[in-house]
Image (cartoon, rainbow, N blue to C red; front, side):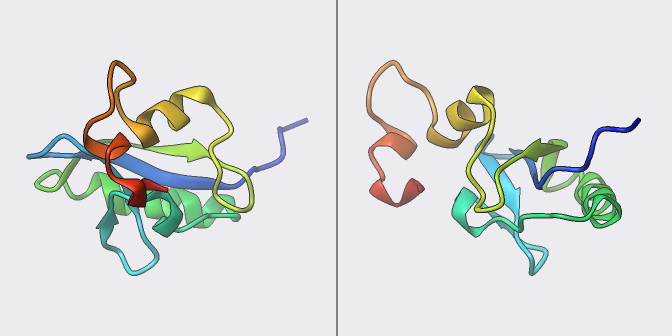
Length: 99
């Protein structure tokens, strides 16, 4: 029996800056997970991923990341990617608008 589909977001890294980015509902890339489109339909998620993968001039390494229905990451890897390096506060950690 197949595993039921769980909510996902499309995530990647910005090609030039390397920042973690998320695909928004308006087809733009955002650095804020809270602005990402939460996909609840498997077919839609697959189409959105194909769109992301068709933009090699903007992003690299696009994939679907599992989130809760409200967009909270379900895996520590995605939480780490969302907040950035943990060695000292800088970048996203210094920016209180990262959530």
